Image (tube, rainbow, N blue to C red):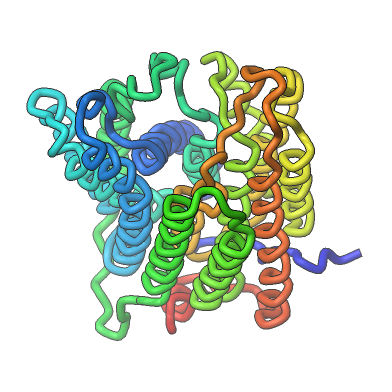
Length: 454
């Protein structure tokens, strides 16, 4: 039986070289894409530091906390814009250079911040970090997303923050929530920078002469508009929901949660309709995956378990590429949301481990299933994972796994995530109805121009 939500088959790029002709080079670029995407993900997901504000005023602490989702929204817009510019006007080697420069500026920001940081500067440093992460993510996506193996490394790194949880063990963060020394750490940025330098030199040396720019090609603004609509609407409604809890913490906010969830789905729908063909599938899967991951909850994991979860995510990614099914991806996220609704906070580590494995497989499978044909659409889908969610705006969004025995179970995060997933399923059905599968995509510059047109 044909899958009613079957995703579009990825189109081949005329500039792509068969994988078997350059296995070692593609494998190295895949490692580079993985670590660089991990740095970008951690940068947009966590604040740069909390240590300096430990004894600071509540205003400074609130300012730094608020800068994280706002920085993520800025990063999403910048990442998509950079990807569009790189795909439209430059050869892939130039995209590698842009990613290298973005990572270099981020390293400088961390070095300067470490030696001359203050509570007043942290918010600004956090925004600079977010801008650098957006440049790295967008340029890197434009460079690798037309080559299978590097694209998989990029996707795995992009969903890495789901697998790394709060990075407590890996980054030597202790039980004090204000002991976040530096995220991402400078050694991780330096590793990614070194890899980017080598990949940039390798791709620059093998690049041919850049093609003469064609006057008829205009900058495609549809993906940039989609990023702005998605990021700004989600940021606005989640901050509004947070304010409702602050001003009236004792009342039931079910209606407010419903309004926020509906606005999130409508923003995803608007963004999906702005993207070419069925590339909007990735937007729906991204907002659903973020909500279900937040509802599942986070806890410290042993450092060695991270790599096991990366392997599971890779298995899910390969399964999604070989047997893509948007219906199955939605069903997996429904399972996670129902798990969050029914699993109490004092569950043992076995339940958390099983749930973590399912989440890793689901994250990888969603990436493989979506796989947009136009690279900026893929960059937007990956970057949308870092946007705040309705679940993350709830005051009880984090589960205390196997810590507080007998704690009352709050099913609100799971129910909110389930509403997002079901709303996205309806949006996916509408998208597939309005964007029927057409003829196979053409290859070459003409196809690229038509694909990006609005």
